[in-house]
Image (cartoon, rainbow, N blue to C red; front, side, top):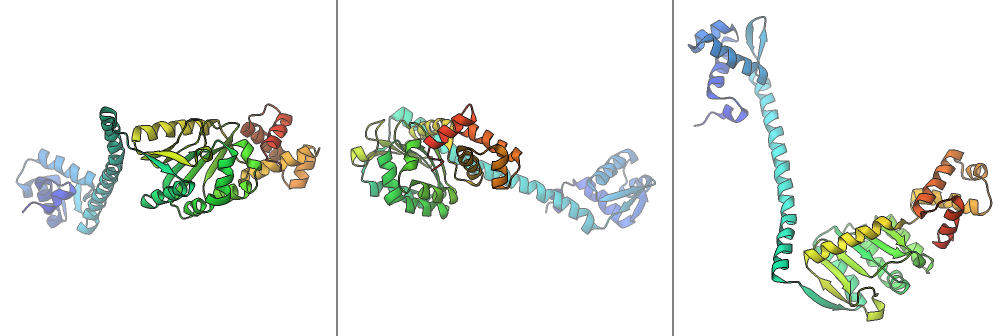
Amino acid sequence: MSDPLATLGLDPAQTALYTAVLRLHRATRTELAQAMDGPVDKVSRQLDDLVRLGVIDEQSGEYLARHPAAALGRLIADRLDRLAEESRRIDSALGSIRGLIRDYDVGHDYQNGAFRVEMVSGADVLYESVVGMAVQSPPMRLLTAIPDERTMADFVRKFADPWIDAQQRKLLNVRAVIPVSTLTLPGVRDQLTRLLAAGGAVRTLDRVPSWFMTAGADAAGLPALWGGNLPDHAYNFYLVRTPIVVGMLRSLFEELWGRAVPLPWGRRGEGVVQVLRLAAQGMCDDSIARQLGVSVRTVRARFADAMVQLGAQSRFHAGVEAARRGWLS
């Protein structure tokens, strides 16, 4: 049978020397060399190794045995740490397999032209299929661009509730880019506030180029005509299950997201809106600070945040832009 201590990092010679120290309990290098019937230099190097491993102690030229439970316990703990680190590396490698599979599929699709495309019809099918895909692999990251008021109104009136519920149940992780003009539509603020509270994220642009979505890393939705919306085409769209197309649309979404403006309805955003509203009433910084119960420095910091979020060059410009975006309503 193999030496069980070899698993802990002791070779046979070190194990034999450790056993000798245990039996003598306290001994010099010379005494241990005699016990091992070996040269002092070789035994000295092995003793240094055992001291470094923490299984014996050296005091005033003598070597003392440590209790095996304490000595080997340290080696066992070190070994377990190494095994845990190795396990983490294996888990990481296993996690990367999905990415490697996608890379393989991209190359395979590119070479063979095997783009999986199907026509999907109907708003109910669209919104229900998203939740269905999320149930299969939660939490599914959903990225969507909405270019028009009619699609936004349909979503708010009929389809927002199941998506918000899926977001609350950690089935979906929603990010959306919408036109700023849709913020003033009836019900939009209430539904978007609920979506944000559930963990979703929404930003606005003056103009969104087209409707599209990506559902996870493997599926994407494209309009019947790029640049168009869903209602004008009876909610007919193409569902594409090709990684290279999904990756392209995700990159496009991130580019739009980087240019878009956050909604002002989070905790920090509400503070920004408060100072803009009070400033619109003609109040100065000191008066705004007293009204809100914060410092003048905080008021000015919120004005600075507003200018950054709105891309404004002055407070006046920030106020105009905030009003245009429906922040002050």
